[in-house]
Image (cartoon, rainbow, N blue to C red; front, side, top):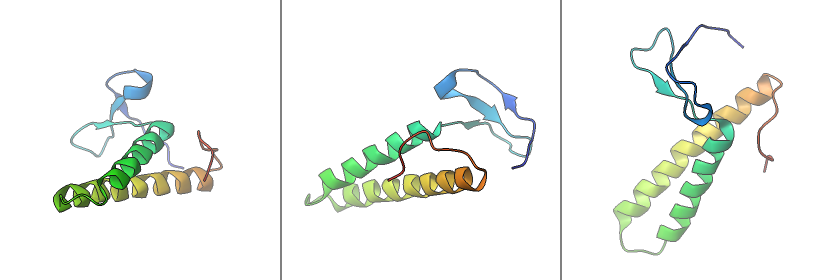
Length: 91
């Protein structure tokens, strides 16, 4: 774990905006449980698009699911490596 100073542009719990020292633009902090919820919602969208004739919609929904899944996997790996518990049950 590396400690760095960040600029916190807003203090709202689930909507924190922060700027890392080496980044040009600020980022939005998404808490782990909220990230997991977004990933789960995207999975539901993928399931609902299956069987439709709109292949572009299926492809975009699938891509969104995969991108969010990669973020969740990284989040969970970093929590494990740093001895932190997850804010949701691990499946």
